[in-house]
Amino acid sequence: MPHTSIVLIFSAAVAVAAIVAKAFTTPKTRIHSSIHAVRTLLSPPDIPTPALLHARSIPNQCLVKALGISSTFVSDDTGIHDNFTREAKVLIGAVSAKEGWSRLVDIAEICVNRFLNAKSLDYATFVQSVTLSVVLAGLLDTDIEDLDPVDVAFVTKAINDRWAQSKSSTTPTTEVLDCINHHIMRWVPDQTNPLNLIIPAYETMWRVTAIAVVYSNRDSVLRDAFISYNENPTDDQFHTFANEGTRAQPSVEAIICEVLQLHPLTRHITHAVVVPWWKRPFVPSIDVADIEEAHKLPLFGNDPESFNPMRFHVSHAAPKRDQLYAFGHGKLKCIAASWAPPAAAVITAKIMARLDDIAFKLQEGPCIGKREGWEGWLIQGV
Ligand code: HEM
Ligand SMILES: *[C@@H]1O[C@H](CO)[C@@H](O)[C@H](O)[C@H]1NC(C)=O
Image 1: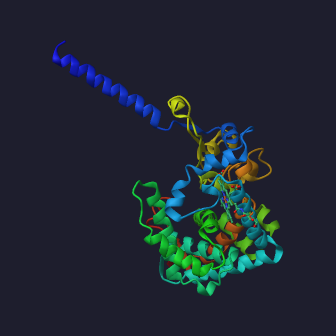
Image 2: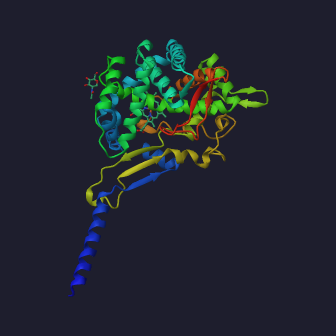
Image 3: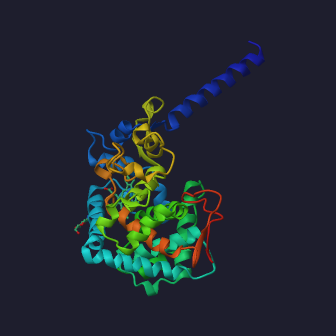
């Protein structure tokens, strides 16, 4: 055989081997974006809780690396799951108890005023600082006086940076994490790993609030809804649709739901399944519930992409709150699904009350951000 054919056959064999190896090692991803598929993935009829916890914990391992999280989000232990969710429910339960709720309203007001401390403020930093302070003081009993604005801003930025780094392949040093924990342990001395509880609450709440403020700042009808809620932060007011002149005014609940529908903070919920190596080229080992896509489906009316809180009015057949998947679905659904919307509405209302274009105004940046992407957004003293 001529020398060149041997080389050719050899290279072909190497190429085939590489393709086969890749097929066995690359995880196969399957994306679920219909409501039915999302529901089935998140609440499979025949899969026990430990297996569900395991499927969730694998893609969340980056949280261990980035923030030292050791909660149920990164573990398949049902004991950890039961203890953690029980503790979290106790914390939010204490706030929703009648007296506790008005305490949260007062705390939100103090925090907003505390951080409106300059002529010009970076918008994301402001909302992050207010939200972290409300979570600390409202849920974990930190004394607001101990929350030095410079330290709070440092911690919010450090959490964001760690999060961004966790998506890249480089292993970040623990120095910044140690700094975060140094402050957190001072603020929450009685918990072993306070970030376990702070992260799920803070990371979601600041983003809902930031987006709710943006839409309400653009539309006087939405602004008025929050001003009414600010004056009367009750359950009733939270649910009330009013008639303002000729235009119907959505409830603040509908506005928050609409924020979560158009901007689901957890855009994807990823589950990994352990597949034996010989099946890997054929069976998906990563399942993604595409919440963002599922929310856009026609079920939600014929204008799924425009901001229209009135779609949550009873006069519309769909959607209802229970067709929102922003909090997940099934056994591992968010324990704060009923608590978080009014709490975010309280913070939003307190911010709207100060963004009156007389004392302060919001200067918009190029586009509405996600966890990142809020460059150019400012709060300015008028
Ligand atoms: C608008 C705000 C929030 C959103 C959009 C949100 C979203 C979510 C989602 C999508 C999940 C389920 C993920 C999965 O299927 O694995 C979840 C779980 C959870 N969330 Fe939230 N969350 C919010 C606020 C909060 C708050 C304020 C707290 C605590 C104070 C909290 C505590 C938890 C806990 C403990 C779980 C785990 C539940 C379990 O494993 O059984 N969340 N959240
Ligand atoms: C859960 O809490 C109970 C009672 O506080 C404790 O005995 C148990 O060790 C905890 N389990 C885990 C896995 O943390």
